[in-house]
Length: 76
Image 1: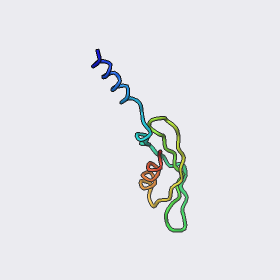
Image 2: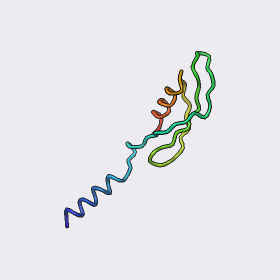
Image 3: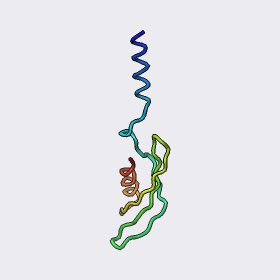
Image 4: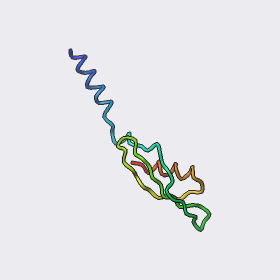
């Protein structure tokens, strides 16, 4: 009986997301404007995986892929 209770508690704890596991796997470009130094200023929209919240951020990068990586890095 004690083993069953312990197993249920461990499984339940594994299913609860933590702040450390919060991430954004999907970021899309909302706008892209050129800057004076040859890069672009991007307005990005990212969806947080654990909560589904939309996170808007601005990043400056030379390429679209770089902008997506930077935006994912800003996701809490």
